[in-house]
Amino acid sequence: MIDLTVVKIGGNVIDDTEKLNDFLDAFSNLNGKIVLVHGGGKLASDLAGKLGVQTKMVDGRRITDAENLKLVTMVYAGLINKNIVAALQARGVNAMGMCGADLDLIRAEKRSNTKVDFGFVGDVTAVNTLALCKQIECNSVLVIAPITHDGKGQLFNTNADTVATEVAVALSRFYKVKLIYSFEKLGVLMNAEDDSSVMPVLSDVKCSEMVKLGKINTGMLPKTQNAFYALSKGVEEVVIGNFVSMETNHSSGTQIINS
Amino acid sequence: MIDLTVVKIGGNVIDDTEKLNDFLDAFSNLNGKIVLVHGGGKLASDLAGKLGVQTKMVDGRRITDAENLKLVTMVYAGLINKNIVAALQARGVNAMGMCGADLDLIRAEKRSNTKVDFGFVGDVTAVNTLALCKQIECNSVLVIAPITHDGKGQLFNTNADTVATEVAVALSRFYKVKLIYSFEKLGVLMNAEDDSSVMPVLSDVKCSEMVKLGKINTGMLPKTQNAFYALSKGVEEVVIGNFVSMETNHSSGTQIINS
Image 1 (cartoon, rainbow over the protein chains, first blue to last red):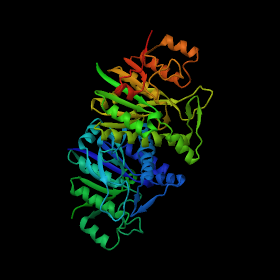
Image 2: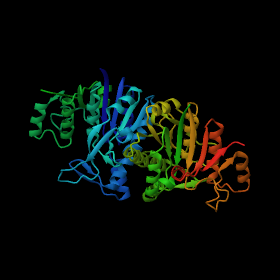
Image 3: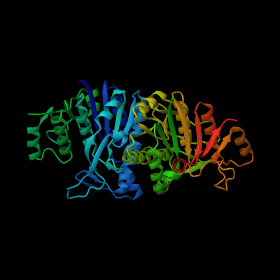
Image 4: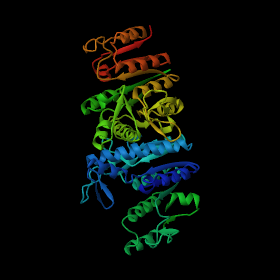
């Protein structure tokens, strides 16, 4: 099978022009098939603040009412997505920005059965693998904003780590997929206070231990859950780390492994 | 050559949910290859108002400073584009939203040599016909937002009529293209005060006469200029009219012809 890399970047990169440029420089040097999934960052919250639209967060996830859905659709699928695409084009990368509604790429349903009503937050129900593959085989570098849809005209806000995970899992039917969750740290830390305590590998058993000991906190927990899910569903290699450091300083991040 | 229809819709449709739904119903009944180009409407100006961002218009064209560029990128390529795509998916149409930066589809350069500095307003310099055709041949219905780029990372705001025109001209190398500029009236009016005075055809000679007599006003003038340009550059059929009426009431709009 052909290699394919799925890279997910979050707010820390998007909110900082210098970091974003460093990322895009490194990303544009990647060879082979690539998919980029980006999160949102502070831009949507900043805009909400300026417009007097309330933003509520529960467990690190945004409560998305109708006004907030408009904002994230504008900011994620419009402002951030198209600026990344234009910046990649400037670096010679044949980028194509998409969200989950485009080509019916990612379907979702409203999150239900939760104590909290998350509003227009969608949990992924299906990925259109064929449409993804067609675009990738045309040598497009897909840049995916984490906005999904229900097939009935409703858009949803979906967690970007989850979108990256589901896309990687879907593509692992046809490619040897490496999934990189890029964030501000060099990897999963043994000691959250010590940035140099990067774990070279993290197994499911070790992860459970660390969760019990409170060493994997609320921010990292869903990321590791996504990571182990991806691995169990056929993704060849899963790494949590810092993409720029991985590309330029040969840091290797934290490799997610089964015991 | 295979038939292909390029439809351009403007703000009057986008700003009105009922009209937009009527349009999307009629549009989703079109057969064959189709491209939709949408304008912006009042949403960007409304948002600018709420944010205290000044919006200046000169000759019906927005002066696009950096803040306004962010707004139109968000609203056109994000909010409007993705809601149209989701609504078309709900109607069984394999829609894909794009802007000019995606796949390097439409390049532009900053408008210069004008008395007024239009800011980040781009005039089209190139259309990536091959990328357009590839997508169309995959049976995607392209939904294009009028945001272009310069290939160096800069996005531009470009007139949606112009984008539709340039896309239609580019595609006419490979398809028999019908270009429909859809707007609120049933066609070009002989008498601007009388909505029933629709001209079935408008020739270049007749158009020049009407312009001299002031019967074609500032709003219609650039549209007719685009229309005659498209015709001269190989577009098979050019119509100015109301798409929904054309599809449902068999009104035929105004056919643009050479004398």
